Image (cartoon, rainbow, N blue to C red):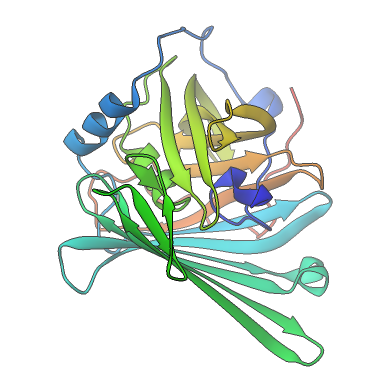
Length: 291
């Protein structure tokens, strides 16, 4: 799936990156550090407290190219029915003029083990409004992390050890020790293909979220199919809140079809350490200029 690069479906699973001009202050020069081994990455995720709690709900507004209000994205943490797992649910719905061009809603449901956040089930559902009526499609992936196998439509596909889907991957990133210069590798499976992601912590800076300026950790996310070396072709960037919660404040990318951006608009959480929600300004994301 070519649009997997932003992890979550901001208009087709991508999002844009721009600096925020004079309102943004980038920290000092990057500090290089050796890449963390995948096995050590999993240990770090396992030993870290989960920064999200049951009841957390994050809502975003998405912009695309010249469409300043292109869609709404939400991510929610729920408790699985068996109580031993968590569920991460993500929904994207286009709005405004974009809806007339791309009237497809996306729903993702990832059931994960509480400690490692490794998925055991992933469901993707789309609903498209056509002239003949709504058309729905659904796919399901069942992960066997011990046998390194993913089952899709009764077909078994070999996956790498510690493989995430693209929703649980974002939550796993929140558990990492996001110190400047650190680089991590996380493996993923999108329902059809294996992929590799490289996460590099670029540094600290202030980022505009709505009408607020927030302290953030800027991270580059690079993507590669199967065993390919991850590339920065789409310039995916994520700004996490600079606190223990590591809430994604802004997700951006620069794919061929136009700049896309998802910006946090509200946050509901039971975690005392989680940051307060940004001011509820108008739907339009903050203006930005490259730099």
